[in-house]
Image (cartoon, rainbow, N blue to C red; front, side, top):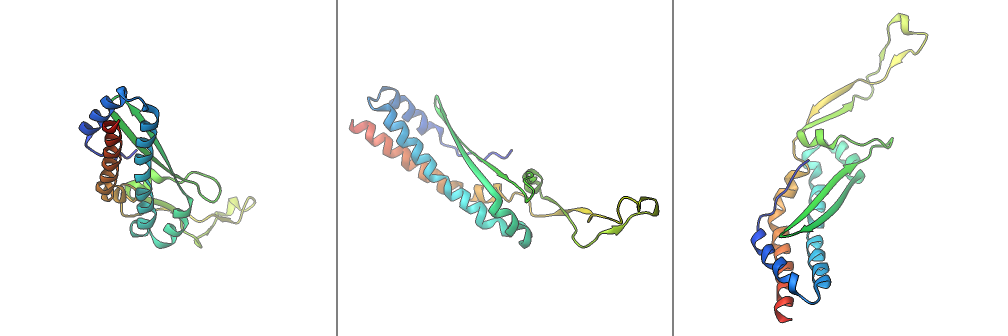
Length: 171
């Protein structure tokens, strides 16, 4: 699993302390979470748009539409965690090996290279399916775009924190 970390917890500690005493705490927490979640789609779009730069063109065309990105947020104490879980399904419904692709290894069949089986196996089938190969690709096709967009997301989250702090101070 890949972790993209946004540093700046000291400001979040301030807001959590002030949220505890706020009268309309639920509304403020809801607004803060919405501000955090509104910053995340930029990262998801960056992964989709830059996948072709990391993967072979024909595979990127196949993979990008099947990508599913879920966002989970947890707020505990003085910490907020935003986790983006990326998964993908292939044509047969099987999970694609995104961890291997993230590490730089794409495993795929070589189409059009079936081979004849040995003579003693002819009663079962006449040829074997295309062999599978491991192809090196540029690693970090998810982590790279997310790290590149990290500064912008941090600014958006800090703006959301500032909006909530202003509402708390205004009463």
